Image (cartoon, rainbow, N blue to C red):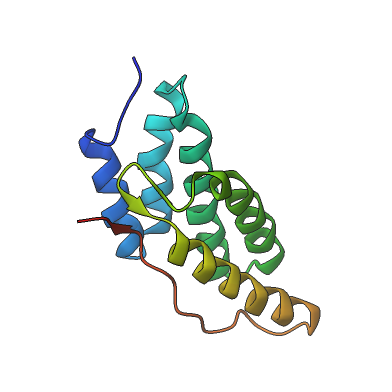
Length: 124
């Protein structure tokens, strides 16, 4: 059975992401992803990878963060400007800005930089 934006787990995962509970958000969305066979599957996977990328960033594993953020962005880019009630344009731009900062720190062999993690915003 296909899941949709009405599934409470979807909103739970968004809330977890916005509370910077990236591992938990990843786990919640993975439940939906595993059940999905339709158009949302790739979108869920992209958000999962972005959440996992921020989790890796928090752990200081910059190369893992870089790979996961790139992969996630590639997957959600086609869904812009909005999908499943989420505003994606500013989210994608903010993740790309974070990615540039993380890549710069990685190239310079620096610690994980302080970044402002974007918020997943619902369209009202």
